[in-house]
Figure 1 (cartoon, rainbow, N blue to C red):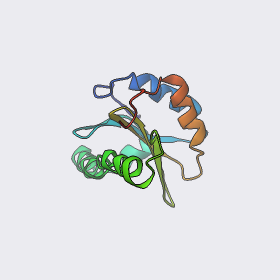
Figure 2 (figure 1 turned 135 degrees about the vertical axis):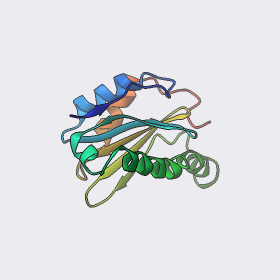
Figure 3 (figure 1 turned 90 degrees about the horizontal axis):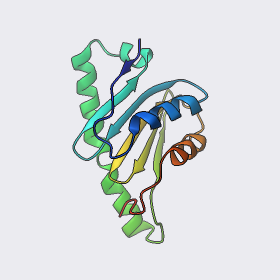
Length: 142
């Protein structure tokens, strides 16, 4: 049985976004979490994701390790916008593709969404669905 939590971090309705993403993906949704610079909160973990760990403590330790690194996304966004590509108004998402997993990190204001997918899952339809579900903040990455 998948693990589901209600949103507590995001300034938007992350539960609605999760449902939208679940309706949009063509393959399995392995994980969906909200995060910011201080916290990481899984909102959905499918059975396969939960079964990868020997127990809750191991899983939470791994998520803490993930958050230690993905919270740096917000610094990387500033690097892209302010230094490398100053003409850019925003950084909306970053994708990391591995041989067994694709991770999509979407940014909405000061919040991030961490989405675990099949490696061949197209990300643009997911980002478009999220964009349609929410209004991007006018100060995105400001």
